[in-house]
Length: 220
Image (cartoon, rainbow, N blue to C red; front, side):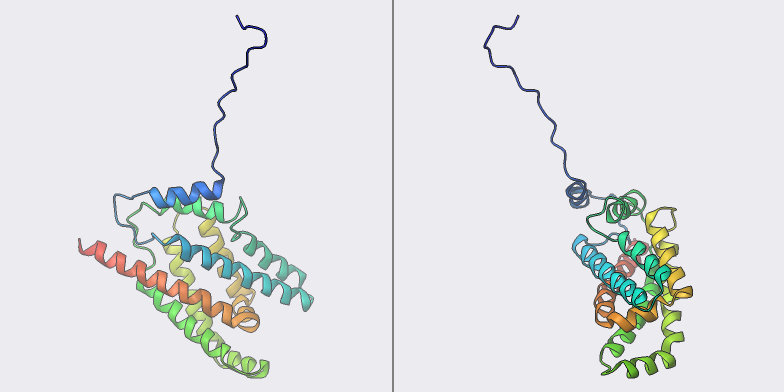
């Protein structure tokens, strides 16, 4: 029996962590029993995603400016998958990574991916030092096949590393198609060679670190 005027007890409410905060907690607290060559630092990944998304949006704007609305839409769609604030973007990629790779002893894509990233980094650095669009266009005519081959080597390696069907593999496949059929790499070098250089620095360091981790794991 409840007395009149007696204060009612408030129902205990369960606090819910925002998805992004929950992800950070999982990554920080989740200690894996086995060494994983695919375990990567959260801060570097966030920077890599931001740079990639920014560059893809610039590519989309350049494509739209030259009247290629379909190609611009494709670039924007890939960029949306890399947004840190999208529940269908970086959150889905991160969950896919946690589910399939974070606690795995998979070897990643090895040294071949790291050397391919280093080749791409050297190319982006060279283009960024050119003084005019004409010089850049001439450089691309001479070197684009080699640069595209390096990108193909990197992306094929990532498909081997991200072998499970899911958002990570789908993004790599989308980028691979754009490089092979949509001249994405050429657009990136034209509109944002500095940004491309920055994200490749991070990618190269992450991949070399993964290759070293894999080597140590194989020696155990």
